[in-house]
Image (cartoon, rainbow, N blue to C red; front, top):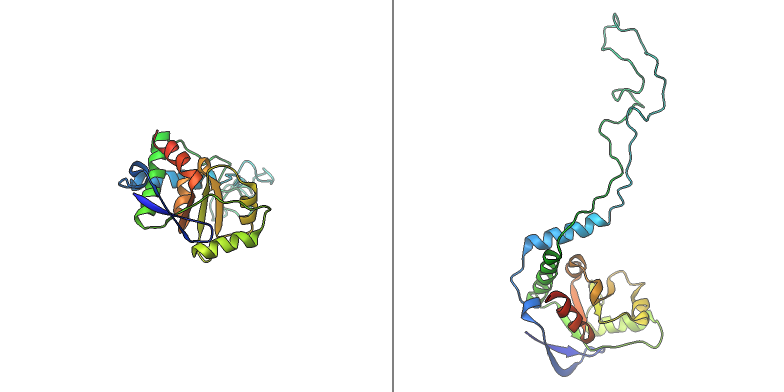
Length: 209
């Protein structure tokens, strides 16, 4: 598929680039997308939750009342989970939520995410640009020129660019990554993808293996 190339002022440069159909025009695999997004979100969880169980609660071990004759159930410890201040039954323990997915599935998920965005016409190809110094106002001007100032956007660079990254860092709705840092979640979480020309080769090379 052909997409026109814009400059950072939002104007057509008169050039077009060919996006690989094997990356941007496949039939999306929704289950692969689901698994990859699930893994990404699971990896964000710290897993440091902890509740004290019966053996860990502070309290006396003496029998709190006699065995028979009270008219109520037997009770041998103040740490019993049935009592206020007692231990928690099957409470959460520290654990890792991460799980493994094979590379081919993750690659399929990213290609599916790109294809979904391409089908929705939410991909913009921008010629490579740079700022002399980090400047948030300049980055906002680029967003306005592209009509993205009120939308979530993901800028994909061919290689790390400190000035562009720092210029966008204060903007919650915009994110800047390199082609090697792309994730299915990041692609789908943005309303619009802005692919710089220099990133296209890296994206297609990574996903065409």
